[in-house]
Image (cartoon, rainbow, N blue to C red):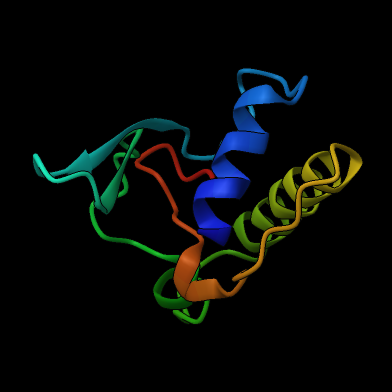
Length: 101
């Protein structure tokens, strides 16, 4: 419920549409009503997270710095809208095919 509440707040908040976060598209339920899952916007990350990309020895420092700035900016914008990202960790941060966090 906390996650659903956060996505509801994101939808209602005056956030920039280009903020690189998933957006709630719908709920997954059966005919009886309970919610089984959340349908979110697709992020083409080829299963790459910050946890697997950042520690690689061949990942350039400039790319790691770019990700740090992007994540800081995203968290700042969410906090300014009174939205708390409750499970912020490298495993939950995706690196998309454009090398953006």
